[in-house]
Image (cartoon, rainbow, N blue to C red):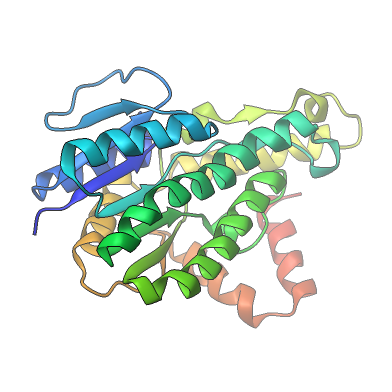
Length: 269
């Protein structure tokens, strides 16, 4: 059945791939971005949106409701990352990640949910990360923002199921997207005597894994199937890399000290 779907952050990576997959399935797809797209995708209806600004969010949601009368599916995909030592993060760096990755999700959900509640139906997919399951070194506040998305989604799911609204968490592993090139780097960490060498090793390992990661179309196909399900699960781990899938399982099974030792060894901290 054709659905009206809204996706945030469609300018590259996951957002673009998800848009393509859902359009191919015949859905009406709206995509948002803060900047002009450098590609054309037939059928994609693009809205300018800054997810950190509530007025911008409300305006975009209202315009889609005026045009379509409903929003069946919201996919909260927009996100940013800043690499740096947790100790040295500035409040501006923290705010950018929390406002985009977490408060942006909260704002989008708050604007869409009244319409979904009125219809007694709707699905919201919140894109988290395996970094929302366990913290990744030198990605501390990115992980904090994704941990927050996980907790918020759990509470939201409990509260909105009574209205026929389904909340779904998507936890991607490493994929080769524009996120790697767009990641900002803390210059304070780069120049810090104690952290700089470890930071350089870890980020090199992270970027190697990301660039060697899965094709975003793999995740997009999975999400297209989830969107079409009548009763999707609450949480989906989507990671082509078996090591990452095992690491998520190990996190809940192994003692914390041992699991952290594995992470320090894996990332060469």
